[in-house]
Length: 77
Image 1: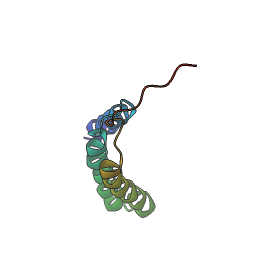
Image 2 (image 1 turned 90 degrees about the vertical axis):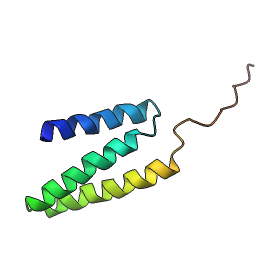
Image 3 (image 1 turned 180 degrees about the vertical axis):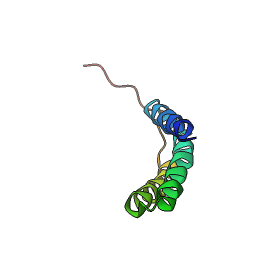
Image 4 (image 1 turned 45 degrees about the vertical axis):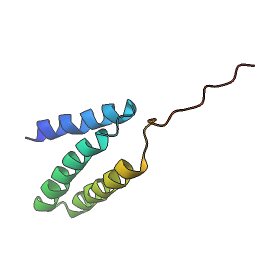
């Protein structure tokens, strides 16, 4: 299961690099998993870190346009 979540997290990274907003959804899944996993393992600091990442994924999903807005072409000199 951990390798699947690992791949989900990497897929989210690739999607964000390609300016796909859905990458944040994959990060929600992977960060949520790791937050619970680490908390149950007694690694509370790591669990808290992934919980913060989970919240940041929500913020990123709503705040980041990811290049979906039309950009003005650059003027040539």
